[in-house]
Amino acid sequence: MSVARRERLRRGAMTVLEICAVAALYLGSAKLGLLQQLVRGQVTPLWPPSGIALASLLLCGPRVWPGIALGAFLVNVSLGPSLPAVLAIAAGNTLAPLCSYALLRRTGFRAELDRLRDALALIFLGAFTGMLVSATTGSGALTLAGVLSTADFWPTWSVWWTGDAMGVLVVTPVLLVLRSARLPKGMPPSRWVETLLLVAATLGVGFLEAGSTPLLFLGFPLLIWAAFRFQLAGAAPCALAVSTFAIVSAAERAGPFAGHDLLTDMITLQAFNGSISLTALLLGTVIGERNQAQREIARACGQLAEMATKIALGDHRPTFPDDKDGDREGEGAKEAHHGRAPGRA
Image (cartoon, rainbow, N blue to C red; front, side, top):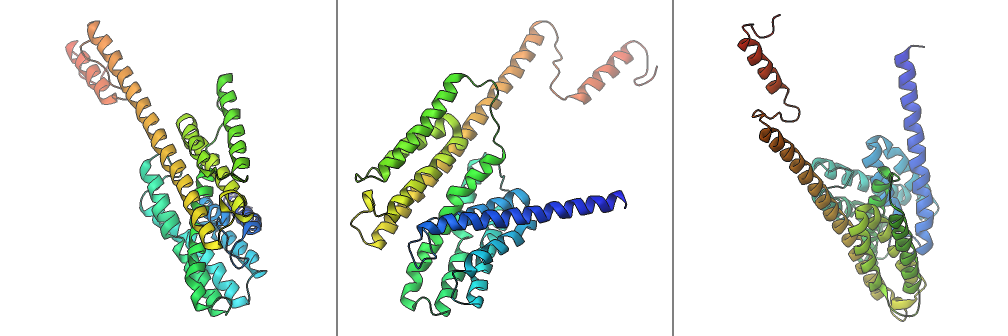
């Protein structure tokens, strides 16, 4: 067997493993999401598979789309009223992240999420625009199958769309951050203590959200703390945790969700989750971009100080970084000064 053929087989095997992993993650996260379904046993206020699907496309490329399709089919085959409806819903759940992926690629999106433009693209193109496909296809399939009445189409569509969009806004940034996450070397103990305090505070706020007192707003100081101190690496997981606690509270009709009808609870919950995710994503990205700019300015100042020192010491021809042409010209001038042609012995 030739080396090229072995390499093709290895790549094919890796692709199959990636597809299976995406399908398994999609199916597992869907089971978790369906634990908190609020509409028709099939529509949830936060649909994690949409975030996992888009993140897998951004990290692995479009070759893993069969895993998304397989996972969507396996999830809906036990829920859908008929096979055509299941196929339509699975197709919509597959096309939605593919559309989001295509839109993000056209804008030059970077998976590092280190620019404000990347955060805005993920919000408006990845979440709000791309997820229109799955909501429209799914709600239309349920209506045509007779599960939904015409009057229930738009309420179901709105919950479906916001659930998929929240999945992208809350889950996708966490997965993209985890891809590049590394344990910091030489981090002082005080930083570890601060991390543990942030985790403990997040858990405490989560329990307060599920209590009888409406204290949802306590999540915002945590997000600000996480974003300023840990940038998106801290803000994104914090937003996911706070949103999860709010969803559990809404499903149990506890805290600020007690004593209201379903529509009021859904509006309150989605407004809160949207505010949490947007705050974490935008604030974490802006602060990370600011810190990067400060590092670049400090590096440039160091280079200028080095050149100023050389000039003060009498070297009036400072060498810029990576200025190879300037070095060659200087060598040629020296050789010409000594009576030799440049480039000859």
